[in-house]
Image (tube, rainbow, N blue to C red; front, side, top):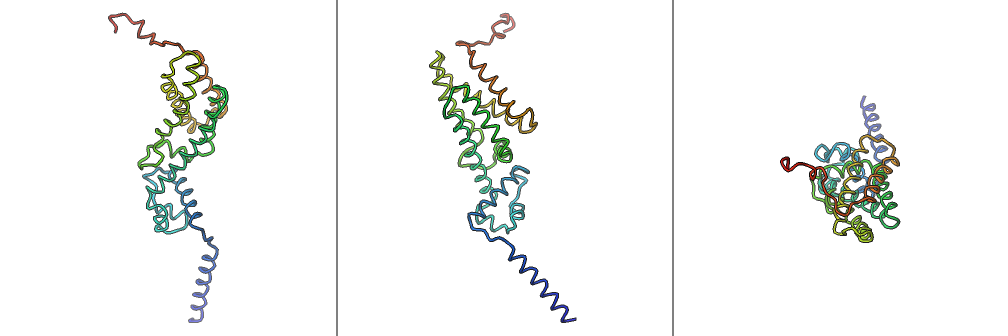
Length: 230
């Protein structure tokens, strides 16, 4: 009996040794990237509040102290995930707005956002949620403001060339970026019509509207009301 116990004990020890030997030892950089990828997927799936350090550690196959060592806590890993996604999206949009005819710029910007939503669905889900944690890059609203400022520069030049007030470029850029961003959120959920068709409709509304701007727009419904109704 004693011999059998020793044999069983040795078998368990050998199995554990083999299991440990099969683990891939990661560098600090590799482990950090792994934790970020796992945290990104978990935050997109459950949101910040429902996600936990325990789950991140479990999925990574490490102990909680390893996660704390790299990021200091859930807030730390979340902030890095958000910053990384915002930088990726901003770079895509700015690159799309770098050159070309104004209509081409609209097409490129709409396609760039929809491409990001399609390629980085988890990242976009995280961005559009209200962030409970301060981020070095800011919030999704501040990201849209950064994009709008790029569009504003283009609009300002085009408005001046066509006799419109360049000071209104900021208003129109906010309206355009907001329209594309909200449509992107809607499309993320319904996934129809196809991406190229969505981009085409966005550009159709934006470009044809911008092509026929009135120099001095007014609210016609308000102007047509009788004095007693005002």
